[in-house]
Image (tube, rainbow, N blue to C red; front, side, top):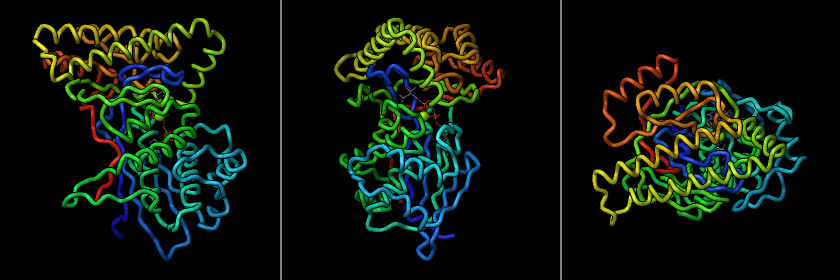
Length: 389
Ligand SMILES: Nc1ncnc2c1ncn2[C@@H]1O[C@H](COP(=O)(O)OP(=O)(O)O)[C@@H](O)[C@H]1O
Ligand SMILES: C[C@@](O)(CCOP(=O)(O)O)CC(=O)O
Ligand SMILES: [Mg+2]
């Protein structure tokens, strides 16, 4: 089997504070994770077909180029993509073999690929037949932005394949990213892919996956943190399956029923994000000398924010008994946890202090694993979407 012509990867993410509120234009704080989704593109010049291989969701599907070409839209702005028209979306569903109200993993993954492939190749100079293979270190559907990492890797791979963005030669074969303008293009396409998977995404997930590091995000405005790497967290996957699209719609329904109650809750979540932003800026500031005792003060604030935020997320309807179980185990050992991502199961984060004792971490990890949860300590602030030589 030939080596892939293009290999790209994009990181998942953890939302520290602000999930769901960010969909309503409030500020959220998120950071990329050192867990990545890889896309390999294998060109088959003599072939007339395109194959998508998604082993993580046990899916492989092949189309004839002519059928994909027939679905191509005519009015694509490659630098500024727009959502598919109803007619175009219907053509994509026909190619996927799905119907409009499908929210299962396979349908959503196929739609995102077909939309990007047919749109990006609509006006590109070349439209390669080939095999697209996407696999991930991220658990799909668990709140770690697997959909965003998938869409960001797809966008980077397809745009690179079609020479819409400039391939950067890495120094002595090292991994490379793209220039800022090209990253903006990747992010725009990834956001459109997220729209097909999430329904009504804020854009924070694909932005973190594209640019990497830690950011504060509000209505598309991104500001990068200089340093947040010193934040240590445990990630806990309850393995309770859930769909972000369904959860985001559930919050929308509650908002429509009780706007006067939901508005102040969303405002409080935003205040939590703003407070966290100030604390992280001080913790990461090279000029503010963080003494031993003041550091404890900062972490005490973050721990209180974690507890309050979890209660507010329960109030908007995205909690789950498995997440309550994580909170009760961690609080027994003096640690603090909250759901991350859309909630309803999936992952929680546990905030660790620099001086959290190893035996406390071991005890909590064992108790959580005894509940059947996956637990791992992770580094946050990984690099964004990258191209691998
Ligand atoms: N590695 C992957 N392979 C194929 N599809 C994926 C992969 N990762 C994510 N997806 C798509 O993204 C969906 C999960 O997105 P979502 O519900 O937003 O959860 P998450 O919290 O992981 O972003 C999956 O159902 C699937 O459609
Ligand atoms: C719930 C939300 O705030 C984050 C969703 O994260 P995830 O898809 O569950 O990883 C939705 C969004 O911001 O688009
Ligand atoms: Mg998602």
